[in-house]
Structure formats: structure tokens, C-alpha cells
Image 1 (tube, rainbow, N blue to C red):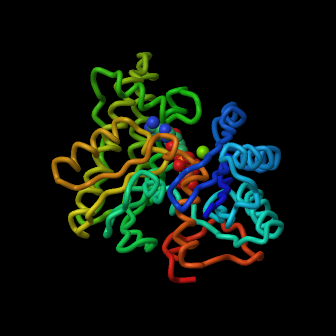
Image 2 (image 1 turned 30 degrees about the vertical axis):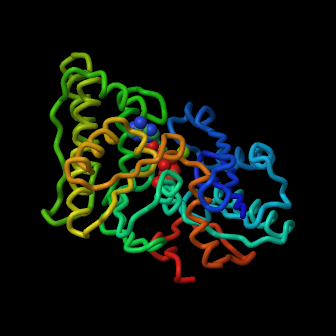
Length: 339
Ligand code: ATP
Ligand code: MG
Ligand code: FE
């Protein structure tokens, strides 16, 4: 069977065709980053308009690259939320139109379930599994007791990791999105400026990154006031070390406490080299199998949406044509078997 998936939750227009739930035949991603860069972040109105401009082209490209015809598509999956409402709407309308025109089922999909199930395209998932979700808008520890069942055991109380990366990068006058630039600076730096770690209460699996972000801004101000140059490399490294220390320590502790048989890393920040390396080392030491998607499946793409939609396809949990874009869609409520 072939699932065609559409992702338009933020600033990537993406369409993928996936065979039998795991074989990616095509995964076309059109990023709007160049458009948004001059504004230093995603402008929602512009994002919606850009999705409208590209969706048809990307759809045709994905079907052609997959080497299938539209008649061979068995279901249409679409990111229903969370995300920017105007951006989500473009994908949802396109998906409904296709579902109606081809007379195939429609599957409403959760964007973060997609990030997590990107790992299903890499290998078999063993349950219970623990997912460390680090993206532009989310930082969460999610326990999967069984396939398609999501329980959030910790989350950020303020900024998401990716958001903190982007804000720090902006303060250092680096281009948007800043994550990859900070990553590169941190790797190249010879020393680190020591920055605080927000551990919160001893037994908490929650996160907080706004204090760390403020600490970076304070360091920059201090350097400027003294008329000294900002040590961008050492700051980037200090920032990255604090982030990696906290997220990996909490993930390892949660994996042990909940008896996880596998750790899943995902979300745009999972592309971070330092984070991938540290987590791999900690998991090897603990004898805990780790899955990490390749870079192209870490950032937003539609193949991961197909991978999550497959959970509902196999259970026949389909949406109707009154499916709505839901900017605040809950991950736990999206768990399979609850429809
Ligand atoms: P969400 O998935 O929470 O809705 P999003 O879809 O906007 O948010 P993603 O596309 O998953 O987010 O991830 C984008 C984020 O990943 C950006 O904040 C970007 O800076 C960050 N990022 C990308 N590459 C790296 C890297 N190498 N190191 C750190 N951060 C990175
Ligand atoms: Mg994006
Ligand atoms: Fe995302």
C-alpha cells in the first residue's frame, strides 16, 4: 500500500510517498528559510502564502519521484497540528481535496508523533521506548509504552531548545535558523564559557531554557559594556554544553526509571552533532539501544508524517472530511486506539 503524506505546519512544504509504512519512495521538502531569514524568524502570513504557491508543484514532484500514479495512492495523511494555523490549513485543504477526488481515506496526523516515528524509518522500535523530542517549538520526554501510545513525562516550562538556539544565535548576529551555526561554532571553539544548568526539582523531568538564554545575553552585554569583543565561540560552546548536559542527563534518568528498552532522539535539534555524539556515548555506556534519524528526517519532512499515519492506517482510524487544522493538537490525545 502507498500513503501520500503532506506536511505544512511551519515553514517547510513537504510531500512524501511511503510504501508499506516504511519504504520512502519520495520525500520532497521545499524550505522557505530564505524568505523568512531577513525577518529573523518565521512570519506566519508569509508562510501560509508560500505554502499555497508551492503545494501543487511539490505534490506533483513527489508523486513523479516516487514512480507511482495518483491511482496507486491508498490513503492521504496530513499534519493536522500542532503548528501555525494558516500554514496547517493549506495542507489540510490539499489533503481533503485529494482524499475526495481519489476516493481514499484521510488520516489526520500529529506533527510530533511524526518527529518521533521518523525513527521507524530507521529501524524497529522496541517498547517501552523513550523519545527525547528537541525541536523548534517542543522539548519533551515522551514515554511510548506500546506502539502509538504517547505519554508526556516532562516538557519545557518556557523556551523550546530550538527556540533558545535561535534566540542565542540572533544575539550573536548569526543568520536564522541559528541552530546549525551555534553547533559549528561550538565544535570549533577551544574553550567554553561556563553557563548555568537548569535542573529544576531533583525528580523533575521538565526543562527550562529561558534562564540559560538570559545568561548568554548577560555575557554579551557585559563584554559590550567593557568594550571587549564577544567570545562567540566560547559562548556557543558553553551554551551547547549546558543544553546537552541537561537534556541527555534527564533522558537517561527517565529511560532508567521507566524501564525503556530503547531511546529515540528526534526533532530539528536532533541534527545537532554534539547532542548526537553525547547521547550515543551515554547509551553505549548504559547498554541502551538508541535510534537517531538521518539529518534529513530530523527537520520537518512529510515522510515522518507518513510513518506516524501508518499507525492509524493499520488500525483503520480514519478522519472525515470535517477534519480541522488544530494549532494546539495534543500528542497524548492523538494516541492510537482512542479514536
Ligand atoms: P516543532 O517541530 O516543535 O513544531 P519546528 O517544526 O519549527 O518545531 P523543527 O523543524 O523540528 O522545528 O526544528 C527546527 C529547529 O531545529 C530550529 O530551531 C533550528 O535552529 C534547530 N536546528 C537545526 N539544526 C540544528 C543543529 N545542528 N543544532 C541545533 N539546532 C538545530
Ligand atoms: Mg522549519
Ligand atoms: Fe517540526
